[in-house]
Image 1: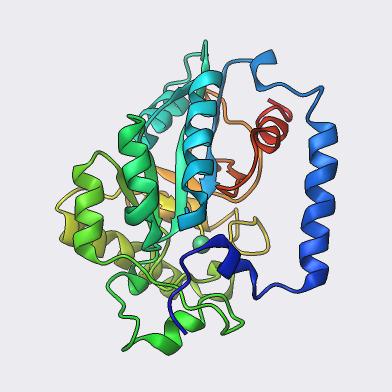
Image 2: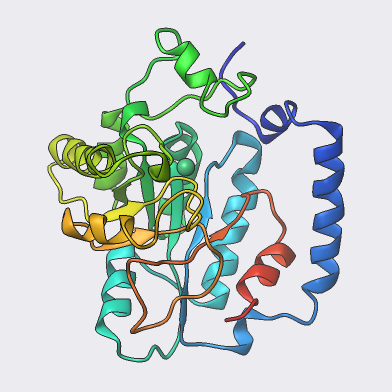
Length: 277
Ligand SMILES: [Zn+2]
């Protein structure tokens, strides 16, 4: 088995039932997205989040970037965090693109498209997976998605340095891609502090942003403990997996994001970006 390079291969492990559910869901969204428009409102920052840009999704991702630019302004996570903290009401629509986990397709596919579109994004890496080897670490990589059917290739630290040099932000997604809620405070702090230290040592840059693996409050992390723990350890932000808009004066320790697939049509983007803005 070779490493997954296309969305088609990535999905071949999914059951037929799951695929039919996806098709039905996408048809429903197409119908619902008609009356929704992200440009009906302003004064928000949305954080789209992706995991992959597979080889067969390059065009889709390029279309997403152009769509984002037609709706608002793409900004860095440092700018987004400063705007949220500053509290001055926003007069426009801002989009902060994020990626989770640390896959090789980021540097192969996402980075060149971002650079050619003059856009930036924040990339959150689970540091224990950075520099893993397809042969040596095969079992660990096959286990990433739990089903053992998909061999995922990750970045190495040189890749991360290349991406940072191109203007991208590298943030932490913990060391081992853990469920923080399963850990005691000492172990959770090791995940947050250890990943921050590795990124700072390897890149020679401050690591100010933490994106919580899985990202659901009360299921994957404790909203009463872990965002405060991240702040205490020197992080400026704590990103979640909850959908929605962010506003100036809101909390940088409870950032909402919208999960996208790079192959989605713009009607799906319009549906999610137009929701509850
Ligand atoms: Zn993740």
